[in-house]
Length: 209
Ligand code: 5GP
Image (cartoon, rainbow, N blue to C red; front, side):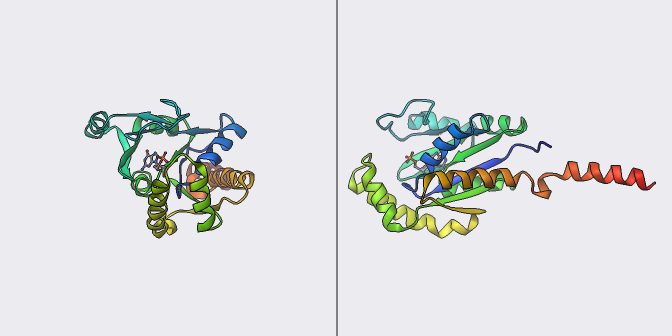
């Protein structure tokens, strides 16, 4: 029984490890999940590649995509714009494939408006202290930027209940399996299987007649 592809949103505090969870998930279950690649005006970090982590855009290019209605959602995060290109997500879902969007909270809520049956997952570290340590230890940002990101996390925490599931990323492998299990279970939700329900009903009806 194959249901429609799911739009899965994975959000979480900066430094919560959602990027690492995604990387492991895509490797462990190769071909099962598809990652949406966002466009951003943020500068490229060391080790990042065009079209792999992001499509890096100038402000003008990004604004043009907004005016062309090319985004499923977009939002500003710490002074930079980030957006999910619409066409890729729509194509995958129509092909029955599960697509994962790793995006921040304002964008996640916009996705829910467009796809009311999107599955929203929120990743948190076990404690705020662990988050601070991870952010500072990552070394990709200055301490000032890390502290800004912590302040943003505090705001984002206000919206956590809007998500369907909470993943506590203590042990990476376990968190990854939890994400996988939730997504797989979600396919069995009755509201996502209306066609199968109707078919079995009709078949039973035929016996009864
Ligand atoms: P970073 O600069 O650390 O790569 O990402 C900053 C934040 O922007 C993260 O929370 C990340 O999930 C989020 N983000 C990345 N792509 C998108 C997107 O397309 N839309 C939205 N709304 N947020 C995004």
